[in-house]
Length: 79
Image (cartoon, rainbow, N blue to C red):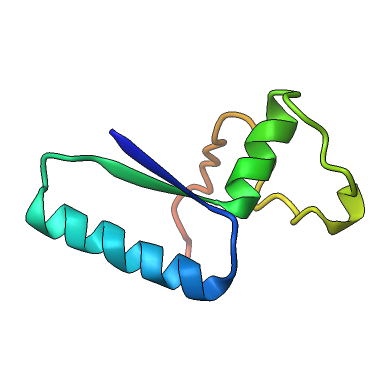
């Protein structure tokens, strides 16, 4: 497995996404995962590895850390 961490500007993120896509096309047996800056910061916070200097400027989590919740909404009664 190959892991890329991208913490720079959007131009570099786009370039890295293209690089990973080409890698997957040419070498499908190689798994590659890109961690973006917010993902990296969330891992640091989640596992108490390092607290960000300014929590105000840390990107908000995309979801609450922890296991995924599955909610059964039942069948819709539209009919």
